[in-house]
Image 1 (spheres, one colour):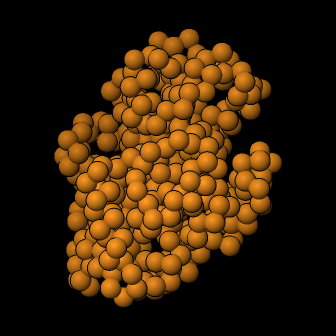
Image 2: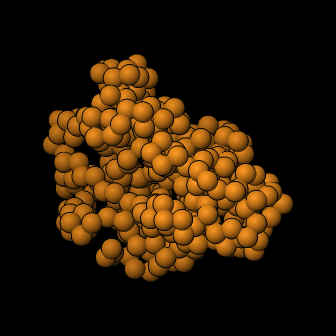
Length: 344
């Protein structure tokens, strides 16, 4: 992806320990650059959000057209961009090509440590069962200790990479006891299905797809290892300061979608299945793996971020201890709750 801030983006990529190429199409690149050129001050007419493919409120906001509907009322166009990982989304955010995205705890710390000015404004999902280590249905891997000597595919710098490391520690192993292979989600899917890797560290919708359609087994997940992994909505600080009303509207629409998901469980499953042309059994598994979460960032998750920050410093991934309270800002969510949209 081309960016107007080459040095920040390069530093971000290096310290995220990844060679990620932004997972969006050339058409999205073109649209992003055009939007970026017009997103200055009060002339902003397009907002760019991170599209998601799993069972969370933001998916409903997009697929129902509610986000476009509400922003159209104030004369603003909504554009959706897709990225394979949160780190790739943060690259776009850092370069000014994305206004609001969603990301796990680790990338928010590494990005902040490298000078990316962002705010984490809400918890938009909590990946526990939906963040897992998968093995093939006929695999001889039965317990975590069996990981020794195995090939594990995972995208570095992601929540699943953190889960792999947690699993290894739980088993009394280290990264040198296994063969870690850097794979983006689409690469990981191909490698896992062709059995070029023994284990795949991945999140939903890939977890549910492999379990339901291919009989893959979950060796462990975030729930079993007691490592819930929240995803935060993150916004460019400059965008939030210039257009707080847009940030609040984004949160209001997603709160509306979260309420709809809770109030219309069966209808939501049917809608998702028909809209994505998926089997309802698969979508039901997604819904079970992804209970609705849309709320301010809790004290527990702030403490989690502090632990992540200390670990990244200890691992020498970052050079400075980052205080997450400097970028966590629940004020936009609180403001949105004072005047919510009507329930759908």
